[in-house]
Amino acid sequence: MIGPKGLFVSAVIAVGAVSYLFTGHPEMSWTLAQIDDYLLNILILMGINVVLAVSLNLVNGHAGQFSLGHAGFMAVGAYGSAALTMFLGQAGLTVLQPIGGLAAPLLFCIVLIFGGVLAAMVGLLVGIPSLRLRGDYLAIVTLGFGEIIRVVIQNADGLGGARGLTGIPAHTTLGWTFAVAASSIYVVGSLVNSTYGRGFIAVRDDEIAAEAMGINTTKYKVIAFTVGAFFAGLAGALYAHFIGYITPEGFNFLKSVDVVVMVILGGMGSTAGVTVAAVALTVLNELLRQAEQYRMVVFALLLIILMILRPQGLIGNLGSWLPRKRGRS
Amino acid sequence: MNELFQQLVNGLSLGAIYALIALGYTMVYGVLRFINFAHGDLFMVGAFAGLYFHKWLKPAVAGWPDWGVALIILSSAMLMGAVLGIIIERLAYKPLRGRPKLTVLITAIGVSLLLEYLGQLGFGAAPRGFPTLLEARTLSLAGVRISSIQVTVVVATLLLLVGLRFIVMKTRMGLAMRALSLNPTAAALMGVNTSAVISFTFGLGSALAAAAGVFYASLYQAIDPFMGVLPGMKAFVAAVLGGIGILSGAALGGILLGIVETLVVGYSGVLGIPPGYRDAVAFVILILILLFKPSGLLGKSQREKV
Figure 1 (tube, rainbow over the protein chains, first blue to last red):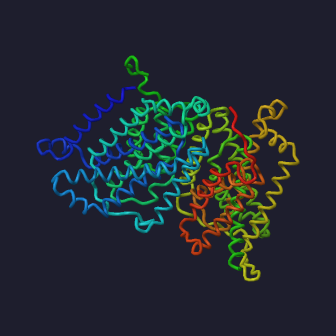
Figure 2 (figure 1 turned 90 degrees about the vertical axis):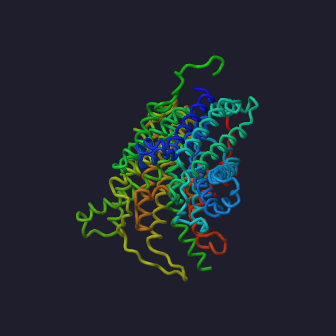
Figure 3 (figure 1 turned 45 degrees about the vertical axis):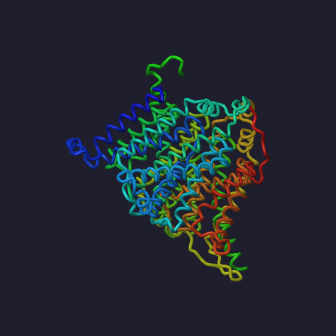
């Protein structure tokens, strides 16, 4: 693996370059002219998918707790942040008036974090009872919680009910998306390489043995789950302020499956592989837009064949062939 | 009081369908210790098989009595489900024997998606009408309105349950199934043909799911490629509620779940739960049962051994 610091530094440079190039510097207008809206949209979707896949990978891959409810946490983040922007955005701008031009970005930052924290809180509430279960039971219970979240939103008239929430201001830019994507990779990467990471891996590889060694398995599982939910919430918040229109149906079981496919193709437990898979699948989704009805058939077949022939994922263990620093595993 | 009975009747017919699907989950879990995620989609395949067999057979059987045609359609749909179930097991699950549970689970999700989207390709995404197999009459019993289809569904379910019990308890194959679910290694050592028994179990469970599909379609008269997702998950909840791996538990869990769901919707005003929460009921039950009695209503708790 490239160390988390290396990843972070390269991500910061990328974010700086990207935000400089694409956020209205008239003297650089030649770059703006070359990137059209369509490409920009795909790049933003790519970033959101990277956040989703990397965060789910923390839960499913590193900690080995197969969750099928990621779309639920994304929904919490999307609805929470959108509601904050729409109901309190104007008041927030007035309060932050004194700091001038920084008011709008700061407010959006607060909104994003609010979405993430809300999702993390729901993740904590869901995780504490359900992480006592294992394997397929956990998968079904997380799926159940995801559906419950969706049904609750569907019946919340204040949030638009089944019709959804429309007219969310479009604050998400490429810079924001890449910043969140970079920090999710950084946080997950450093978490996995820390003492916590050892705990996650122990829990994944053999829960009973880990428990016998004195590892508080519940604690590690809940931490992974909550951090995963936090970033899913951030992704949801970005998505809501990008599309401008969210419905409960958009966060159903199939959305969770989309993310699961990214994680599995990339290789469970490989942050780099999952990032590549998220980028590749976003592009593939666009290319297959003409053949929408075949897309899911292909993904389903891919999932089955992959599990039989190559369960570690298409690009699992990516990065293991990169030069390692001595003294780091 | 009448309203309560009315809700109970409606709940019973829905519960009978859940019970039929739940039996498949429980049987497969019994022999393979894994949750067949694609089971709900065999329910969908059964319903579509019913639709198409009705279309194809109608000219051939003109003039036959209605119940005869219905019986033929039901049994051909069940046969179709059984064959598909066995094919799926052979192609997708058999190569994974002995692999980690998670691998098998992901494969099952893949099979489920494959069936749903192939169904969408083949049948279209829009809901289709289901033909009336038997003329519906409404019986009125002391103010409670019971449709003859509801009665037929419940009676047919009971007959299928009796037949299943006979197969599991009185035949050699049933004996082999029970042996396999008790201890796979010992069963293999005693000469049980493990592969054949697993295939048979898949076929049997899938046939019941297909029958449930035909019943469901007859009751609600509309079918689409994604119709199996929710009933499938709810039937899984039913299987866990009764105690997964236990046949009578699956039947009990299915009927209980059907009744509870109908009652929650019927008395939403009294309970203060909006009827929109209908689909959440099953999942709340699942979470409660897994937290407080994971072995299910009829199950005995087992310690996990290293």
